[in-house]
Image: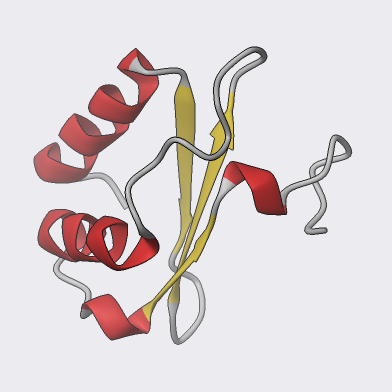
Length: 80
């Protein structure tokens, strides 16, 4: 999935040291945000606001988006 609004959101997050990946292969949109080394894993907006931003960027209903934040991802890339 590549759209200009989604690319813009990715660039905005990247400017603060976050990496957004999206998986839309299932019934729900899976958004995973990782923090680069040294970047605060707890410094993102609340998930309901991020879901609204992702909804605007992708056209997917906010309640159909699952979001994983950096603090929920272990060093091995797996969910904790």
